[in-house]
Amino acid sequence: MVPLIRSRRQVTVVPVDPSKVEVGDNVLARVAGTVYRHLVSAVDPARKRVQISNNRGHVNGWTGHGRAHGICTAVDGVPRPRTAGKTLAS
Image (tube, rainbow, N blue to C red):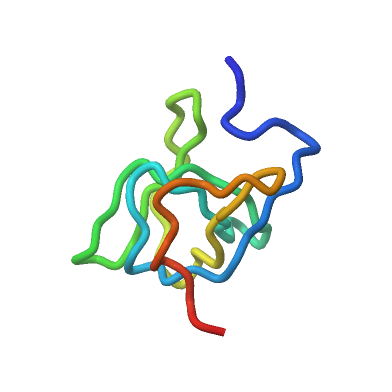
């Protein structure tokens, strides 16, 4: 299966407002002390958490908003859709 973002692509990531993350967003999340880029597959706003997965349908689990640190806004300089308004002000 082809990855959503291939290896060695230049990815632009900026701080994210986790409360604005939606299914389909690509976020940086801290898991077991390491930061990974994950696909958001579900959102639970009541419990302030997101479900993170890979693009092959494997669900990695739920993580709290405090562990979602950034959102991918561009790949190789091409803006990603639906990221406007989700970033934190600098």
